[in-house]
Length: 131
Image (cartoon, rainbow, N blue to C red):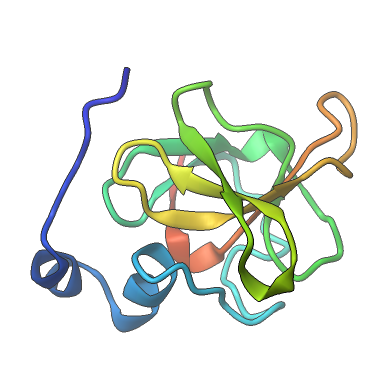
């Protein structure tokens, strides 16, 4: 089990940029194609921008054509949590950081092998740690 990382709303506002706060704490979405990790291929690990929890490996990143960084799977079973999201008149599976519960994006069952999953993640919700 992952040790929870909890802060008050004021502490989150101090810790995060306005864009990070909007996505991670208010379940927002950056505009397609605007994120800094769209199209990048640098080896390393992607961690939560809110708490530094490891989320995805660069080897599982692929170009989905959606305008957001996409991954085939999280770094481990304990990296993310999944929740039903019924906002915007549709049902989707929301992906959150398992440590701080920050909103990362959504997961869809239309990805490539080996998992068939597409974790569509906001760039602003992550930081890249080079190898």
